[in-house]
Length: 228
Image (cartoon, rainbow, N blue to C red; front, side):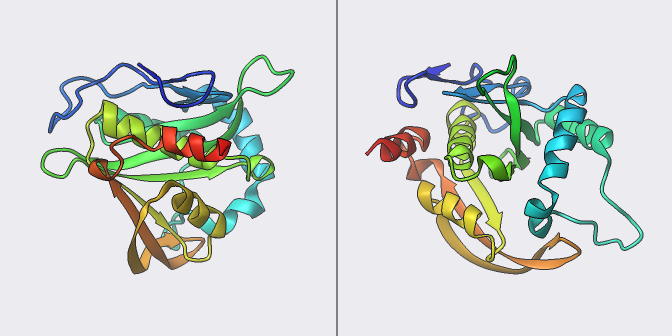
């Protein structure tokens, strides 16, 4: 699908799966979304080396916002188990595990600059999902996060037919709060001790949008605001 609104190079998404249906009538994954230099594509086993390097380089930047295991004797899955779990969820139509990649001068393939996962997809009478992401510190402040969130939210609303998208953010996470502010997500309030983050139960603020609130989508207005 090609969207007329959006970036000058065109913003493309995979063909519609089953817009508006209360249950997916076909596979919703894999999907690849593009806008200008950004390419959001499925995470793969063979991305391990590059993904690990980017994550290692950003360990201090990401640590305060990282999900952790509330079981003190447990840990987080390694890369292979993480990808396997995400692939299973995608096959079950409950997640969309994207890598955020970017075309950069001198590279033969787009470089990994972040990750965005749509999770907890619920069909039926709910038609909603939750979205989370991280971006390489060296590429922060360049519009990558809001563009990626807008691109994926539009895909979920317009192509998959979902009705509601939710993003939960730590109150101290200024950069992420600015992302939802730029895109117009509605602040739904405070959730005490909502998720286990960086070794403890952490408070969050919840933000959401429904498809009726953005009849023109998110991506077009966001990109137009950047040009104005």
